[in-house]
Amino acid sequence: MSLMEAKTPSDVVDRQLAAYNRHDVESFVDCYTEDARFIELPDRNRLEGREAFRAAYSELFARHPAIHARILKRMVVGRFVTDLEDLEGLPGGPGAPCMVTYETVGERIRTVWVIKPSS
Image (cartoon, rainbow, N blue to C red; front, side, top):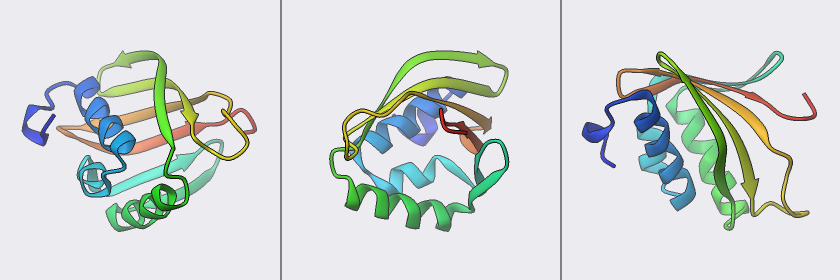
């Protein structure tokens, strides 16, 4: 799905997830606004800005070539999409599901909040 085909908040998040699962860093980063933020709740600001996303996810994909995310459940309220996601392909076997909320603005993601089981 190209940027121009992303019509709804779910479409925007689906486009980002597809790029993530292909390990296509440029398409993945293009899903985010220039000032995008990644926050691990309750209070840890992990990434800020597209360049930070590019660096972090380039390293993640290089270190974990089998990493893959899948959506277990989804809820959409306005411009917010909340997914219960499961990551596969990490050392030590499958991880516990985490909750991810995306704030979309137009056809991009501005903020990502993540709650991990250990949060």
